[in-house]
Image (cartoon, rainbow, N blue to C red; front, side):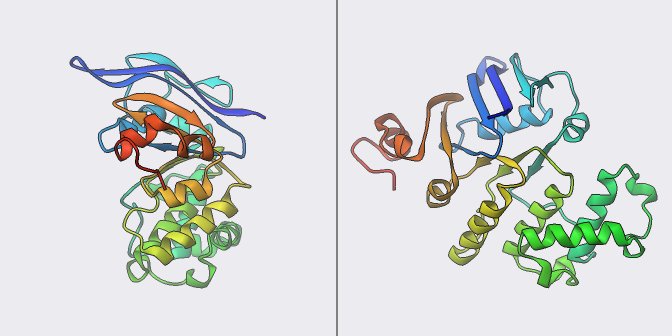
Length: 251
């Protein structure tokens, strides 16, 4: 297997507070690797370092075998790193299809400031339709984003991320704010996407994590306290204590 992401001994200090404490983490090609942990564990700080939004105090990050520690966010994206957010970032007054087509256009090297009318670009829209089909939104392609549901916006954000053709997708709580049926739809969508892109999944919904993850790493107070398969993490006493208290089961 090819290692897409290799994080080694990553440390981030804020005025004496250790937010990331010697984190070692890998994501393999075709893998969904879940990163879980209580609120305040340092998950968002770690993701920000991976994207280049925060500079680590020490340690290193490689993407597909290439060091990216000194690269800005845009350069990391050009190498195949993409991210989704807890709160969706879309163009609400454009259609679902337009949002993805614009993302395809930007990836192709056109400045957003001077973007051509994507509705006249057959190749852009054909690729956008293919991506919408992957995430299950083809039937909603002509709807304005402002008219679609929260769950559909989450799916659309995945489509926009896929339009950049990433090798690694950082998913920041994709289940946040979703109902049961929407969460199940998101799980199904991510299963389909795994054939296209490796994923680092940050998520609190343990049912979704256990349904999707090949491996799980548990972050507590900035340190990875356990890493392993679903069954290994489910049965790990230290993980149960970190989440629920001694003796409880991590369902």
